[in-house]
Every structure is written in structure tokens, then in C-alpha cells.
Image (tube, rainbow, N blue to C red):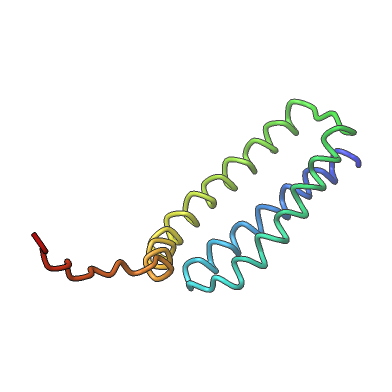
Length: 106
């Protein structure tokens, strides 16, 4: 994969991460899940390409800039989804039932 293409994959991944933030802001968890799958395909493409591509210093700076923005989006997504995950965990947790204690038979 040529250098320009690997950077375009990072750019595509950044665009998807922005869409993921928007989905999290809307609390559209289904869309977020679908976008995560798209992002995963980009990660696989990058893993293959990085073994075949050497980047120059300017291209490395561009890649780092993309990664910093992607990480910032990831933090924002986690900040937005964490309260929902806590609520979901509460709903999924088995309700503890307090049973009346048996009468003491001494």
C-alpha cells in the first residue's frame, strides 16, 4: 500500500471516529456499534499496510496528528457512553432480594 494510501486510511478512520462521537451524542448506540465495525476494518487495513510502508518524517507527523484526534474522539465517546453503560449494568444486574430471616428456633 503506498504511503499516500495509508494516510488516507488514517483520514478515513478519523472521519468515522467523528461520526462515532456524533452517534454517541445522539445516544444512537446501534449506529455507534456499526461505526465501530467500520473502524475495525480500517485498523486491519493499517496493520497490513504498516508492514509494507515506510513513512517519512512529515508523513509520520501527519499520522501522529490523525492518531491524536482519533484518541480525543475516543475519549469523548467514552465520556458520553459511560453513563449509559452504568445504567445498562444496573438494569442487567440481578436484583438482590432480601428474604425475611427465619424465626429463631432455639
